Image (cartoon, rainbow, N blue to C red; front, side):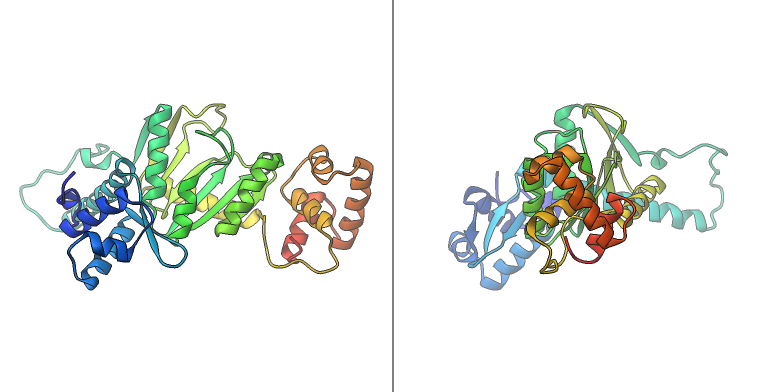
Length: 329
């Protein structure tokens, strides 16, 4: 690698040198980076800002501020993909402008025939390695927002996604909608709570199988089949009516879902009641709730009936929703 590494992506020698330095020495401070490159403080700050904005470098929380670099094989691909998307949008604008501009002697395309440039809104991705790589690209390329529906099947462990913590640390909003049965696992619940503590907005529905991952509402991945038991193929969706429909679907499901964390609960609600209500809101089964709380099913059933009466709820799921709206969870 050389100091002109990032030149094809529109970044200069200073950005290339800084990226390579952060890559070689993770968690470097700006002072340490200044010692390793010959640049004025203002130029150094500007270069670091451009690298962070490009998703190549992440600013870590804490004092002093430290920086870490995204893996080059993932981060550079993500940035190149974003640039390609921008070029694709430019092509669309030029075509739209051209179609509105009077011309002479130019034949019109045959009715019902799409020009070659019109294809490419949906791409088939096959194979575990390719799926994992594209999912990493999608996340690391996000600048503002990630929308996700979390349900099986998973590429790797359902309780391990270090990229999300990296995104949250650099201010990317992450909204995740969980399939409630998946939250019955203690390990999964613990992982979700760590994500929430880091800044994730989490909600759940009793059953949601529309697995998806959307970055900045501009690009998405969904399984080729929502009923599949293994992740073997997915659709990579670029700006299109299909992407708009997926985002709209996510927003509607999000409005119906129950928050998994809210403001401080009322003082008179004890910890077991809070956990019980949270698991009810998540749609957990009776056996899982009783096992998690360490109580008998008879005791659990009696307490649920009391809480449903307090909340004026006809079903357990309604009780969970009402508790969330009142800030008890």
